Each structure stands twice: as C-alpha cells, then as structure tokens.
Image (cartoon, rainbow, N blue to C red; front, top):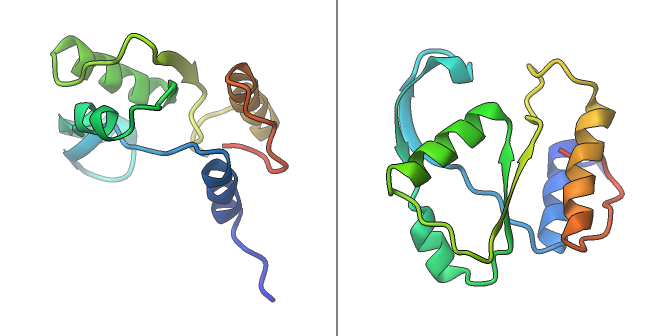
Length: 125
C-alpha cells in the first residue's frame, strides 16, 4: 500500500476535525506562481459560505497575502463576517515562507487548540 501524500494527510485531519478550507480569492490574473504577482483579484462569495455553514466559528488567514485580501474584501463590503466568528492570522503554509515548518505547525496547532480542536498527529500546515 502506497503511503499517502503529506498534503492528503493534512486534509484528512482537517476534515476529521470539521475544518474547511476556502480561498478568499475566487479568481485573478497572475504571471507565475508568486502571490506578489496577483493582479485584479476577485473575491470568493464568503457571504454565501456563511449562509450555508452557520456553524463556522473561525477564519484563519494563511499568510500575509491571504489576510490582506480578506481584510480588503471585508472593507470593500464584498464579505460580511458574522459577529461570532473569530479571526486569526497564521504563518503561510507556502514553502516560500522562510520559517521552519515546526514553527508554522505550532502556530496552527495553537489556534486550533483555542477552538478546542485536538492537536492533530501530523504537522500542519
């Protein structure tokens, strides 16, 4: 039996903990893969997500760009965050981020613990 991919392992942990992933940007123009190359970002309809998933308790921004665009879309009125939803900023899961993986994982696990989610047995993000 083939070993599953670490990304797949992390997704399984998130699913088992009732944690979803959602991109704040629905579409954009970009040359290359770097976030700094994002042009004309258009927001995902997070309001629709909140409407379909009333039990959302927290939103974690996965890095500086995610936080920047999420806050921008909120400020522009494209997204309304329910009052009971906690916002937290986390280090980017990107390999381009110059931070040791165990430091990133510890930050993610700390935020999950604040919500009462048990620490997963795999490194996050």
